Image (cartoon, rainbow, N blue to C red; front, side, top):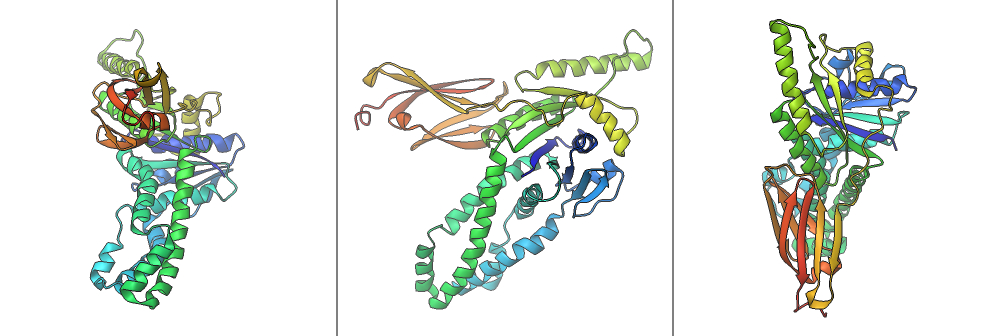
Length: 401
């Protein structure tokens, strides 16, 4: 299984260039690399200075590239399952037009694009797959799809096939059971693919994200929110890259030097505010647009120097930590939920049965409580820039059970 490195960031920050430059640097060092674009804009070929197709092709010694075609994947991979589901729904009495609409699931193109990345990472001669993802919002949705689809699939078609077979037989007769068997096989394959994707994304040794930004306050603020969202999804960010840092004019004078000095001062202030976000690298703004392998290698040299492009920040470690003191009903406990938070983050915390619903800036994560805390009452919570601490005390009605 190849290492997967995903580049994303706000539109226009240069993530495609840096993804291509990273792939070129890996290939130049003797390690085969595949650079893949899932960005609908598909500017990877422009950065590499060549025409790319949906299938990987070698563009330089050891460097392969392709641009995934989600529409083609839908026609090939999703078509069979849609056909099975339409047959099933029609057999259960659903109108043909309604059955057609019910099997058009939003996000399926992006999901299949991610599945294609996983397939490519499991095949081919490359050691690393560098992914040029779409803009931040699209990438967050893309990375959340495997878990969302898995939940949808389990609710709609439970794993316990015999229950569903009995239900269908009662509704539409035994002929439907045979149709269900064919559909269930296709659904089982889909469930396996979803689980493989979730496993790949959650393994920091196999998959990590690099966030690209330009030193601007609006972009930096979005980057902080993205870090939080990825942490909530359990996806490891191994570095942040600040691109297009303008040169310092030194002691030069004149209008151009004054503009550069002001712009660089603003950029330095933004970089200074990016504390607590892990490893931060910078890339100088270049006068000429970096197109083609030689220019990309120059960008990579400025970005990585003599270090290995695959070296990133260490995993943030355990997300949940429990601490406490005291005995019996007088004990007190704390649950630390480690997640990067901006000063203006909107946070909501609610107890839902044996889980905590943590919502940050509209993104929700259900946190399963450790067994000890399931028998406790929430007494308070506080937050800082690195996470949330929730306080508990024993519930007398449950503590001795």
